Length: 291
Length: 321
Image (cartoon, rainbow over all chains, first blue to last red; front, side, top):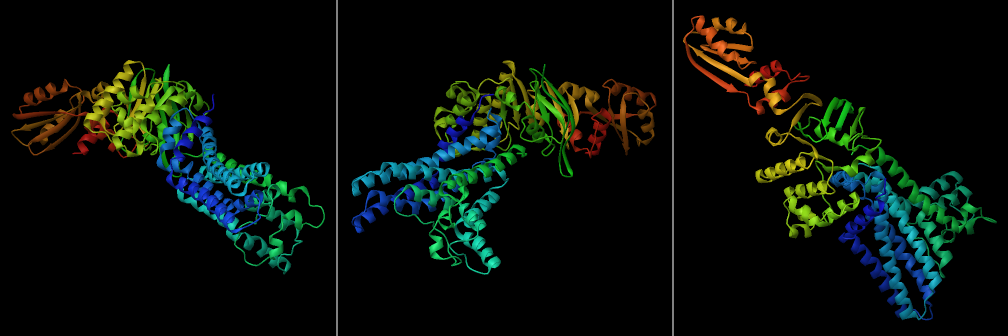
């Protein structure tokens, strides 16, 4: 049987592309980039376009997950609750087409948002700072696209796995809060209880592995390897680990040569895992659900 | 060939049995009405045919394909009008039809489909979120018709339609049937089914209580009549007399009125002559045909496990008074 993933994805892209909320988020993202570029150009002297590029890391790491989660958390469960999934499954597309078509379509929407933001940064970088750091720009855009895809996958996976909108929203918001606001409490907190000390720079390996598995850290670590300047993860901090430790990647904190899973590039695997596992769970549950 | 066949199809939600051991066969090319009150299990049955819901036990085939294992072979050949569906509010009506056409691999003209279901070209340009309930129903019907399906499965197609719209829907079903399409549609309103169906199945509390043609159901009632005779004297004495007659099912006497159900139409005359022969003075005879509506009520108001035979039906009709 022919696959209808592409057809469903195109419909999704059109449908989600008409959501006003999503467009305001895209507008916010593009606007922040533009305003930020102009502000840096206005205040700072002697700064290259490549260094300004790292400025993008701040709005991107906050808004991209939010936009992607909003784009995705209702994808499947929203249709299930409204009943339009019955109309859709009454046509030739099957449940596989629905899940992956939605994933693809909504990823494309977020991809467009990222593309627009980067296009603005490219143009403004050239106009205001006089150069185009093309390779760095491209690398950063690619990493950001992967980061956005991760959160779309997470949200679409959750939306396929649950039966009500409320559950989907609760899980998605809860996960985001864990990643951005509660992470240090949940990782450095137990560390403190176990070892009776705040987390040192050279922390135990399990702790570094945990740090490595936060997709936001994975993104900033990856971004730092492709752009000049430094992008710090935006996190709620509770003072359970030193500022110095906070600004270092797991690879830098590991005494000696870091094993492969603590290297910066391993962040790619981390981002892929955060997308694939929720989609796999969601797909499995949606396949077996009574609609 | 059979369009739909279920055997032992059962769906349980915890303690509740929504569909109970359903055996149903719908032949190719027929218009089959699936009747039952709300909550009888009609939608659950349809959902199982479309693999939206998985049966607890039993199996079903649609157009010869297994409803679960081969659902990908079924969906391109079937047009579905689901119940409790919603449209994509931001997409236009025409875009819905284009999408349906794309998935079914046809290039049916959306405007032609719009016209067939009674939507104008201007309606087609508007976002479907602005549509009324009836217009959404028409749009979904249009999506079901795209690609000229071999089988139309419609769950409560008259939902949201006014009487005029319901007649249009019936014309559409007749038109599809003439083109050789098998139509399977559910309703909780008998008169919507009566006008177009070759056969009906009546579902109640998850069980199939009757499957027959409309005429067959009528015949099963044996003329489907009750007689009320007013005698000159108290009627109690005549009760045993008429009860013993062939073709009389159920008798009650109250005051000078004798009420009875006749299974065989010819029994009416026998009753009158027998009473006259026994010396009764008959002041009045009233005969009421049992309407299909009351038959339906009788079939579906039973506590459980009604057999759908004439006895059960007439008894219920009496009890319902």
